[in-house]
Image (cartoon, rainbow, N blue to C red; front, top):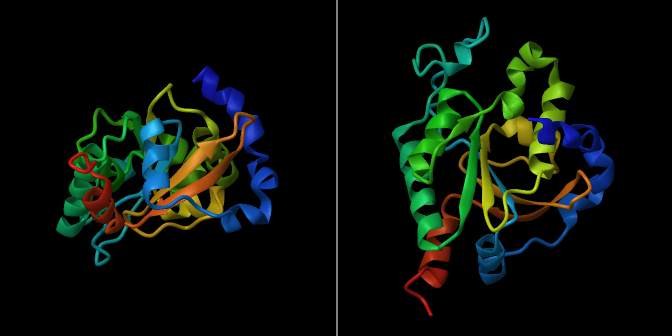
Length: 216
């Protein structure tokens, strides 16, 4: 936690660091992106997988977000669970090293991370939905901790996976991912980060087909 706090102050200035040009930077694709992921050192931010939009969040007090009751909080759809499993299978097939896996404590984000099947999941309010930011010091505070997580280099030779919400990415980074989309961030070592790649859920299968372990 102490290490994370050292990044928070610098991360508050991240928007100044990436400015309006970050979203315009040419992104890695195809083999270049796969090789960057295999090398490690990236924070891969996933918005939770597909949800059932006939449901809605009913958050009245702390911990309500932990509920997996669809009458109280929006949950993954069966399609979303399948998306998460397929993404996890692709990450393994591409031989991409994963270390820490961090998820917002909402049921839909934790379930997305667990369905990927890549390792133990650490729930963290550092990247919690901004709709409940009032319980954590306000939106600016959650944006700061989210940026700090994205600016923190993962353990050597691995990638960190973070599973959270669209609104957190929208306010903390230059991108607004769709459900199940993954965005690759590279920490710059000075409390900032830059976007280096984006993958829609359907893109993973194409990468496996072309660059999977069975390929030369």
